Amino acid sequence: MGLFQSHGRGRGTGREARLSGRRIIVHSLDHARAAIAAAAALDVPVMLASANGAGGYAGPLWFKALIEAATIDHPDVAVTAVLDCGDEAGTVLGALRAGIKRVRFTGAAPARERLAAIAAQLDATIESSEVEAALDLLDVAELEAACRAFLGGNKASG
Image (tube, helix red, strand yellow):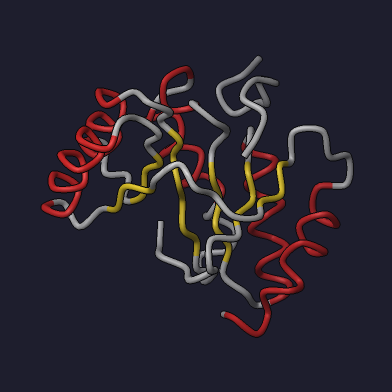
């Protein structure tokens, strides 16, 4: 398995985009590229999220490199990237140090409050465990078509 290839782990649920919490969960560079290509075709922003806990097993630098590589072909698409760090506060700190601006943390509220204060100093955001509708691309065969169908409802919210 290469650096940007799908790993098959972590089922479940750049630039800032406003999508009311809708997101596409990506597991590989191909997933991220398909989501961004669909967003470009529809002229809508896109929110790309890692799989649950990916910050811990794949790492913040992997996710940052994946997003940077995926956005090259469509630099005008507004992309929000969210790295899921599970309940690992240390991984959240590593993500913030790496320059990731949006991180999901499912740990205890006191830790989340401390992490949010640190994130605010870095102009970053810590999400809580509540996640709205998402398209998980793990087992999807027609990536771009699925992303277009999912993002089609966001056209008016861009």
